[in-house]
Image (cartoon, rainbow, N blue to C red; front, side, top):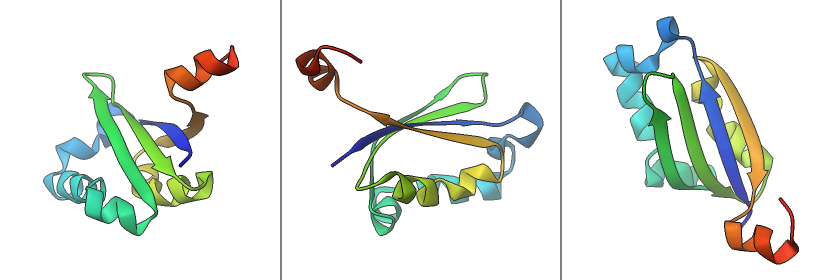
Length: 96
C-alpha cells in the first residue's frame, strides 16, 4: 500500500489542543477504527512540541483518501500530503 507523510500546521491561537471538545474529536478521528473507514492506516503520528505541527505517516491506496481523512485538521490550519517511501526502497532505487 502506498505510503504518505502528512504535515499539518496551525497558528498557536487556533491550536485544537486548547479546546477539549475539538481535541477529543481529533484523537478519535486518528483512531485505527476511524482511519480504516477512510481506507487509511495510521503507522505513526507525532506533534513537534511547541511548534503547532503534526506529522503523520499513513498508508492508503491513493492521495485522495488521505486528503479526505485529513479534512478535520484543515479547519485549524494547513495540510500537506507527500508521497513517501521506506528508507530501504530509497536505497534500492538509489535516490530519494
